[in-house]
Image (tube, rainbow, N blue to C red; front, top):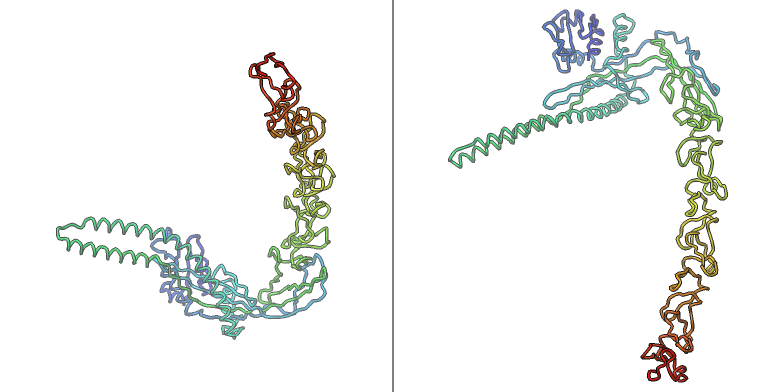
Amino acid sequence: MKQFVADFFKSLGSEVKDQGHLLEVHLSPELAKYFDRPTLRLVFNSQYLTEDTELVTYGSYVFNLIYDLLRDRGGKTFIKLPKRVSATKQPHPEGLRFCNGEVVRKRTQSTYRVEFYFNFKITYWFDEKIEEIYSLKIDSRGEVTRCATPFPELFLETVRLVAQGELEDRKPRPPFSQKKMIEWYQRCLKEVEAYAREQSVKYQEKLVERLYKNLSRLDVYYRQSRDEVTGTDEKQKEKKLELLQQEYQLKVEEELDNHRIQVLISLINFCSVQTPILSRRFLLKAYGKEQELVLSKNLFSGQLEYPACDSCGAELQVAGICGLQSHITCDKCLGHCWECDQDVCSSCGLQRCEYCQAGICAECVRICHDCGRWFCNQHILGCRLCRVEFCEACARVCQVCNWTLCSRHLVKCMACEAEICSRCTTSCAHCEEEVCHIHLLACSFCGQLTCTNCVEVCEVCGCQICTRHAFTCTLTEKRLCPKDSDRCQTCHARVHKDYIRSCDIGREKICALCAEICSRCQLPFCDEHSDELKTCDTCGEIYCLLCQDRMKACAGCASLQHV
């Protein structure tokens, strides 16, 4: 605001003295008549306000006078700047050097650069009024940028030229058609509307807090008022309560209206500026790509205008072409890729190898699949199974075949916990765990490959068997293989084959626990043929039928009457 006011008075021939928080303005005769005083002492903060000073803020008396004067004078302005520098002095490229490529063509052209300036006033209406000026510049390419002040230094210089007689005070023809100017105005208006929406959101956040406090205060006040309504006449009492409720609703609606933001955007003025430019175009060629650079000389100010770096935006005094995307950049933003031997700009992603610090571009870089760091071709490895790339720090080696692999193709042996590849591992047929070949054994009975945890040894013959073909003898509790064990047909238990006998009658296989033994001939009998046996009632000895016929007395107790 302070800079805007100072520029305004300077542009209209007044003397301005900046005294920190105070501007002392000695007005020109024309402005002295307009402001009805010869001198103004202006402050921009209420804490510095005194009797002989005027406060300048948006919407203040002095500001409104300035606004009214500008609105009448500068609705639309077309400025065509003169050529104050001889056009014969072409812009020499002494300050522009090239770090790569060669210049294959040069061309000089004299033109006018056209820029439009739009000054908008944004007004925010709610329970208070806030105004601000928003200034935009749009060039012939349609690029929109915001101006720091409504009056750039160029405008002030133009006013001085008119006052000195170097520039005619007349309106040149517009540089573009009305249709084109309307199109640019609409583009700038969209920028202003977007900015106004952002500001409205910020103001709305503060308004919500104030609205909540005001509504809470109203609610408390009218609740107390309703409680204070007394009287014996119920109709009269009800009527008073109804009136209070209606009044409360009106107050609430009034608060809501006051805290609802309304935005008004209006165009204060616009100005087109045509600046004489002498351009020298250089066609730079490198790595099979061509790009044009333009070194311009402002024939009004005599200033050289360098092209901007595509990466950092700085003025290009040492320029080069990026070998990847043909960007024109400065030497500080260019680096050399040691793989493809091209200069690459920082925008295209030139990085350093984490191992040797060599420069690598985005197309030549090799990224470790595990840690994500960048490496050159010499310091990257590949998995021999899937070709995934990884660095030396993330590489894994199979401890059986010594192949270099990625972490996805390495597993830990369940037995020895060594890292091994999928070629050197086999799944155990029983527990399905991955096991290296060293800790993998074959069952002597079925031939299936099993790990050492799933293999047992027969305690009779010493052969290796899997858990499915290992049995525990119910008599000796030894682990046996199928060859050294047999199944009792009575109790169905697996028993050491030395403890299996055959029934003397049916030849069924029975274990020692299930067999009934004749006390005289010691022949075994199964449960099915146990009716062929007879027990001595005196001593309990058991005899088969053949032995009963041959015996005269019990062999155990010599009793005749019980046999």
